[in-house]
Image (cartoon, rainbow, N blue to C red; front, side, top):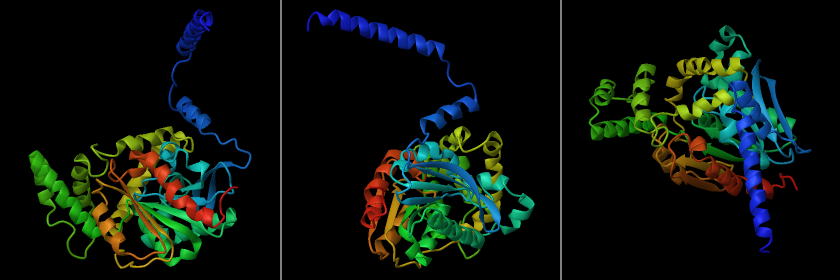
Length: 374
């Protein structure tokens, strides 16, 4: 043993030298194309029972884009309904949803007027159809497509933020389609959420003695009262300062760190990545004021299991409003998971805990239904 020591030390030294030389010879990625290729190869699905596909499907009379990632198609389907409106999840899923495809067949969907779907259609034709009712109809059709395509009686639906309005409505109307509904940053009484968000933001502004924030917030008071939708310009003022004080992303001034990840999406072309924010602006302009008048507090009972993921510091969509509703709603089973280091962007802020929670609380429901790979 003692004689092998010098030789072992020499081997380690030579190996370290070789690795250092190799690193010197291989520079970092030169631009988006190389960076995307690296990410694409890292997450490439090679399992014989798996599938990695991005495609257009016909939904609601227009072409809409979905991506499908699965290491084993015998696993349960998990359909993601992104937030916003227009804040697509597909282009950031390479980071946010890393590892999900080992336990689920994950379907990401770019909604009408958002992301890849925006560029796949004539905006002049689609823009008049950008309504809350139409998006609810689209969501139902996508669930039906997923059930038929993958031969599943039931699927999981995960809705984030605005997508949680679509998702909870689906769970209420069609429990027979779902293994469970998973709400992330769940919206319930949007007007009450807006009022609490304004009040918290003003509290932060006064504590920080930020006179500009105080003046801006006072200029829109009283905020989110009455039955009329909040004007978009007032919402933008509230969001500007709420984000600044960390109410959307914990201890960060905004969620740009997550949005920037879209620039490295293997599912998006250069053109799609550059146009996604234009699409989001359209969705916000057409939908946000109406969305923020939604009230689902009348939903007192569900016939499908309910799982909520809430960021402890979420004031963008009030976590306390959602938790209060959760305490009273009846469901075959229900689980609330708090994310202590998150605000509204739970999936980007604590991605490891999200994956662990999906495996711990959602997948066993499919296991009991024998809808998992053996």
